[in-house]
Length: 520
View 1 (cartoon, rainbow, N blue to C red):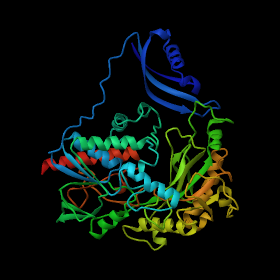
View 2 (cartoon, rainbow, N blue to C red; view 1 turned 135 degrees about the horizontal axis):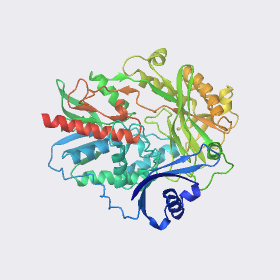
View 3 (tube, helix red, strand yellow; view 1 turned 180 degrees about the vertical axis):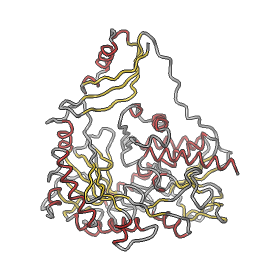
View 4 (cartoon, rainbow, N blue to C red; view 1 turned 120 degrees about the vertical axis):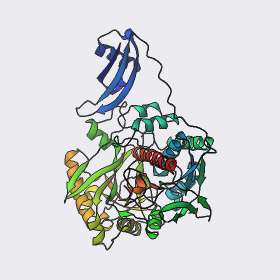
């Protein structure tokens, strides 16, 4: 007999397999020895009451041994001599597009401006220790894209866009732990992602695909409205008729190239603000209603939303037990992001806290046209650099000092390794963002006990929440609305937000490119 059940357990019981089986048997009304096996389908935390509970949904096998489930098979094949399709960018969209092309019998040629994950680490160390930015190799550019060294959160609401479970299965196939297949908010961790990304790249190459590092796209060659090839910074030309453009939300040179060549791009609203960091203990106490977090519970997270002055303000990319990282892609700018290791065992919790901005805001500062949002974004990042302490030292302010227009006389310990400098955040953020953020942190404090405190610190600036440009494409063919054979993809094109949704869009663009290729 097979039953599907849902049980609520204490964290300690949920961590003990014998106890889980005991409660399963009780829920099913049978003796524990009659439970032949069970499969967890979903696991989540319910912290609404004073005692947090673990909710497990499972399929139970009573008095029968389940048939052995077939191993996941991505159906990869040798494509060494197959027709090729070029992919620009080796982030999640590019890598999953490549894997899907291989499944469909086509050879991917991936161009990545940055370095492989191992070589990339040295450039990240230079950012953190010396404040040196390599414009081609940083937290945004390089193998695996921004996600590799920025956490590996796999939670998405984009279930209507594609097969989320397949994406998770592929991550598991390449080395991620099995819990990503059933946890409500799956997370890999920055310490584990590089090995997984490396395994994906090796598989692509073993199947006959090419992965070209430190190879930067500098031109798209056209014959009328059709792609005929691409050019790289080294002067090489690659002939091709299909290009999946998966360059990420920070490839400003690509947006500028498209605009210069009269390939349509559009200004896109986005959101910007700060990273807010609390001691993790404060977040645990608030969310778990405790003095000390149960050791069987993970560090607590939060998600907050408000409407202030007619603008949406929201927490973004929350990193429990995390670290604030420098995410600039050019000298002379300050950008911050956050990440957590797999154990989420750092003493701080940080989250982007950002305010929606649009064309009216960009125009108020003199920015108009398709690249207006990008220029506005640059302005704020450069202002943060000017007000900071040099060498990527970021402007920072205690939370209640920020709302009281008071420059902090002291700053608490902070996880941001390049360092922080006491400054008025209002001098960094545009006035419309500053005003909405001031109201929001007070309102968030009313929703979440302990949130509004001078033990929390605001670090500027969180500005790469999404692409400031949309590259328009046909909703059916996924080709650019003007250029045949060009497939704008994922975050950099304005069609995804996060690792899983970017991976899904990469697969969709690969399928569309193959469908078009077949018709030629």
